[in-house]
Length: 425
Image (cartoon, rainbow, N blue to C red; front, side, top):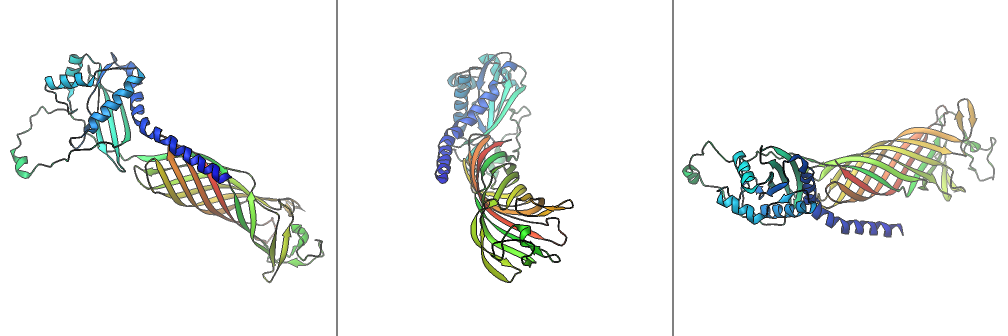
C-alpha cells in the first residue's frame, strides 16, 4: 500500500511541475522589474528586442520580449509601449531593431516615446536545450541600470546560422569609428545548482549482526537475560562463554526517520555532492534464529520479545551524486560515507553504571556508515523541488558494557525510503 502512495506522489509532482517550469522564469523577471517601478520618474516603459551575444539572427529575441511584455502588463505596475510603435520609432530614428543601443540612444528613445525606462537584454544558449536570459531595466533620463534579472528558459525557437567572415571580407570591412554603439560586456558566470533539503521517511526493515566477546572474563547467561543452553533458566551457575554471536537478525523501524541536507551541482553539470544530518532507529523483532557459542557450536534460538535491543542512530554523512539529467525530472544515484553516533539500549542486558552492575544497557558509541542512495528529484520552478529516495545503508560500531577486555559489536544494514522538499539558494 505504501508503494502505491509513493507512485501517486511522484505522478502528481510530475504533472504539477510542467506548469511551474513553463511559467516561472518569465513571471520571475516580470516581478523583479515591477518591484523597481517606484524607483523611476514615470512608469511608462519600452521593452527592446532581446539579442544573442554572438550576433546570430533568431526568433528568440522577439519571443522573449513578447512573453515578458505579457507578464509585466498583467502585474499592472508599468505601462508598456506597443511593439509595433517601438519598431516604427527605432526604424525612423535609424536606431535599428537589434537591441544594441548606446547611452545617447537610450535617452533619445526616452524622449521620443515618452518612456521613463527601457528593458533590454541578451540571450545565451546553455546545456540541455536551455537559454540563459540576462535583462536590465535602464532609466532613460540617466542611463542608469535600475534592476537586473537572470533566468533560464526552454529554447522553443530556431536560429539562423551564424556565418563567420572570410579573411578577405575582414580586410575589406571599413575602419571602426570611435563612436561605436554601446553593447554591454558579458562574461558567463559559472553558477552552482545548490539546494537545501528537508525530508522524512521510514527506516524500513533491516538486518543486524550482534556479538558479545570477552577475552579475559567469561560471559554468563543472566548478563544477557537469555537462555543459551535451552534448560529453561539463566543464572550465574549456568555455562559461561567467551563469545556469543547472532547473524542476520531481523529488525524493524522504531521511530520516524528525519533529516536535513545541503548540496549542489555545477551549473548544468551531472556530478554533485551533499552533506546530511539525520536520525533513524531500529530494533530486534521477536523471531526464531540460531546462535553461535565460542565460535564452535550453533544451535536454535528464539527471541521472544520485540524490544530486546534498540539502536538510535544520529548520523553525519557525505554523498557523491551523479544525476542523469539537469532538467525538470532528475533521476540520480549516489555513494556515501559518514560517521554515526549510536545509542544502544536494552532493558534485558547488564552493564556497569559507575561501579554498579545492573540493567538496563544504555551506551553511546561512534560508528562508521556507508550507503547507496537512489532517487528522483522533480523541479517545481526556479528554486523549489520535491524528491523521493531509496537508500541502502550499513552501520558498523562496537560497545563494551564498561567491562574490561570486552568488545561487543553491531553491524546494522537497513533499507530506507525518504521524501521531502528542496529549496535552491
